[in-house]
Image 1: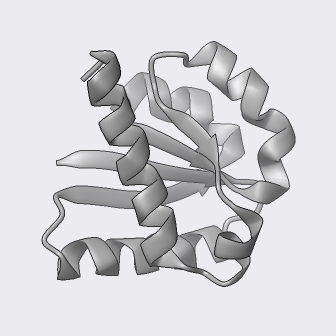
Image 2: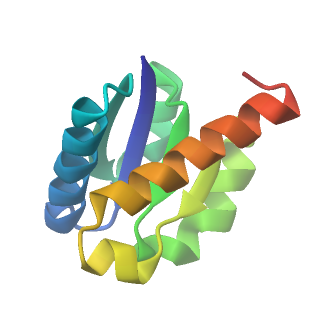
Length: 109
């Protein structure tokens, strides 16, 4: 099972988005676990649980470069603001899957 972790500054909307993403994954029998955390927990979560993909909420996009530099081995991207705002679990899950496939093509998986 692959781990897709969302990180944001507050948490409420991101938790709801994670639930919607998990529902889509479950419906299509995609073996992923989607969870949401505060961006303050990135380093601890990466050290203890090593996610397969990290998605950063648009309100924390300014932290992307720093996070990516500290954890270059974990695919990372910023969630599209429209998809985030509409809680579009399907599109954000597709973004995570794309990152996983890209990782495999690069030979890191």
